[in-house]
Image 1 (tube, rainbow, N blue to C red):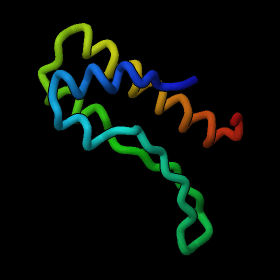
Image 2: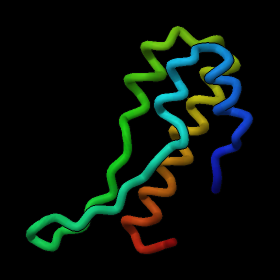
Image 3: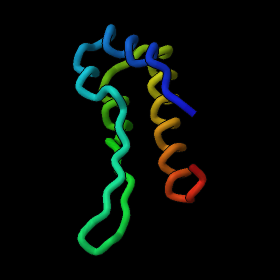
Image 4: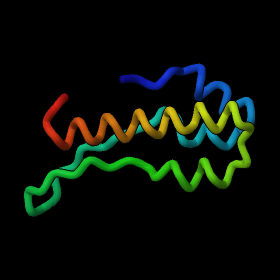
Length: 79
């Protein structure tokens, strides 16, 4: 499971503001109570607001899904 750099490149070519969201990050954080969190940006908001072409929408959705799969695998201990 990985995100291809070409998807990021296409997104930036479409709208330079996407550069602020790359590379995609997942943060592993332990809070003061010892609870562990996996945190990432909600890409749904960005994707829906961007007015992407169908091709870019497909790429952006794949990126979002890959990040969610990684986070779910991490939460389940499957990494």
